[in-house]
Image (tube, rainbow, N blue to C red; front, side, top):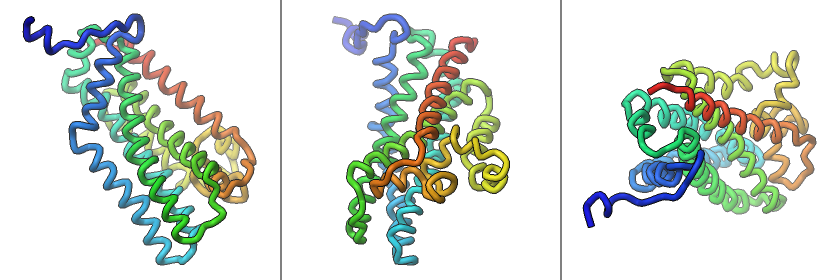
Length: 267
């Protein structure tokens, strides 16, 4: 048996899935076999759970601390997703790794989907499940007895949906532009516009609140200024599900455009 026979793992994928398993293993290894995962965990715990405690000690209001937790989750996690999503595509395109990998038995849709799945799972574990689970214990420790377990899990689902929106947006932009500037700039403009331009949006374009993910975690718009995730945490009925559906549709659209564009890329 030769060295090549030992080192290669045969796969039986066909069609658009060809090479997905190998590419996915490689991307997941970039999380588990490096310091990326624990660094992400430390940053998430410091920003989300650390600032939760700091806000609680300063305001003595668990509701303010909870709102702060959702707002930081709505900004910090997407910011990380934007940077990592951009680098995952552009880094390989600029180094020539993408051209080399795609010269192997790997379909281009599988190239995009492997990155989306691996980064989606990595960010889910480090920025949603871990800090979210600890935050639940913090909420209960500070006496928020009204917290609904099912509603809290659903609220974390909105945290993850918001994160996926910016991850898929970053992946799409990385396939459309050859530099980091335009892609990062457009994604960050979308992320920050809901706070920088909140008054014009509410006054002149309130329909944007129905089709963008801003109101999932940020306190303006529907529900008398409460984010949809905050309403779910307390077990209340949602005033609307339109932003949730629209955000999911955006994620599918961004992924589809990224796959369409990478299939037409010449390496």
